[in-house]
Amino acid sequence: MGTSQGLEGVKRLPIMISLMIGAFFSILNETLLNIAFPQLVIELNVSASTLQWLATGYMLVVGVLVPASALLVQWFTTRQMFLGALLLFTIGTLVCGAAPQFAFLLIGRLLQAAGTGLMLPILMNTILVLYSPEQRGSAMGSIGLVIMFAPAIGPTLSGLILESLSWRWLFFLVLPFAVFALVFAFIYLKNVSQPTKPKVDWLSIILSTIGFGGIVYGFSSSGEGHGGWSNPQVYGTVIVGAVSLLLFVIRQLRLTEPLMDLRAFKFSMFTQTAILLIIMMMTLFSTMSLLPFLLQGALGLTVFASGLLMLPGSLLNGLISPLTGKLFDKFGPRTLVIPGTAFLVVIMWFFTRVSVTTSTMAILALHICLMVSISMIMMPAQTNGLNQLPPRYYPHGTAILNTLQQVAGAIGVAFFISVMASGQRKFLQHSPDPSSPAQMTEAMVVGVHNAFMIGFGFAILAFILALFTKRTQAPQE
Image 1 (cartoon, helix red, strand yellow):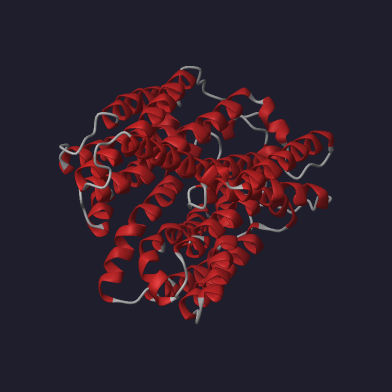
Image 2 (cartoon, one colour; image 1 turned 90 degrees about the vertical axis):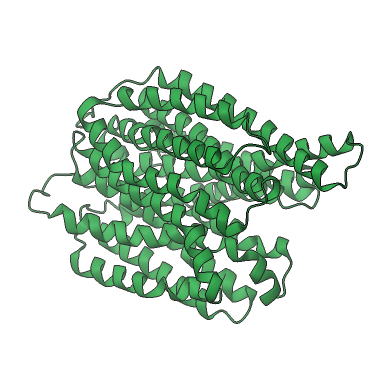
């Protein structure tokens, strides 16, 4: 993998703009469709559990492709990889928009996911190659703006589109932007890496696909009903995934040219970052998946109103990411990560006190504070961890962190929703009148409280971990 040598004449801005436009629309699509599910159940005449594959399948493909990206980044140039990923995404968007039935819509979604799964690692890898460690905070902050901003506006934007247009417009309106991103990248995107074409180890690819795919699928489908964790299909796929993952790890440590070089974990700050990011993704997803239940199920808000309520915090998170990036370059990670995690502990404690009488303004304020604290932690911690790696580990480091985030996200959603559902069930079992709306609302609040208590525990763990953060110096080997 080539590094910054010979890149003095390269104009970084057009490259960054090309990457950010492409990434924005592919990430936007992750959250754009979910709000249309009730409409799609009727129009496509499929059950909700079948339709769930549009979300589960998307996460599955991204979770499976990201580990392989470490190899692909070394086999193809930045330009080939990015244009290929964008082309896949654009074709997928067209297939989705024109889909005559569910099967075609699913194929389109999986093509979109393949494009998205390849795009994120290219994005981070390019930053590591183009920018020196002293400038990476600001560059990563700009990426943070895209990564947080796009999924934040997804539900609100699709709510607006669906008010007056059919679900197909969720894809048709994205299509011209995807084509524009493709043309822009074709004109302005230059290569920043030299392919080294390492040996392809097919057994590693198979083990990583079964491993990450099994775990993401198992956890994602555990929240769909059908008996949850008592369903052999759920725990079976998780066990198969875990065994494959263990074999994958053993094989990677024995190979001289591994698919995903796990020796990156020898670097202490990188390892700390990986653990911190898993905890942060679990906390983030606990809130993102629990709040809609609380807002719609307990406080009686509409889907569009709850999407609107969560918008300011998510927008602010994206907008201040470049600022936290600049602060990281100037003051280092401790100034941001330690106060950020302390702030997170306080906010999560307040979330455990939320009840039916809590005003929507209070929830809005809490959500804004939560998203600010997350922007103080996520990108600075990630940049600091990657900065410690030698250049040859860049593709592996970005692939490891992106994979862990995808897996932690899938596990987080399933885990917290199952905690909430179990709390609801227990409450209603001891309720004098389980069918009364007031008792059902109370059960929802109890379930959400239980889940937030675990989120609070995760936040304390993140704070303890943050205390050991040190500014890293990148080795130049």
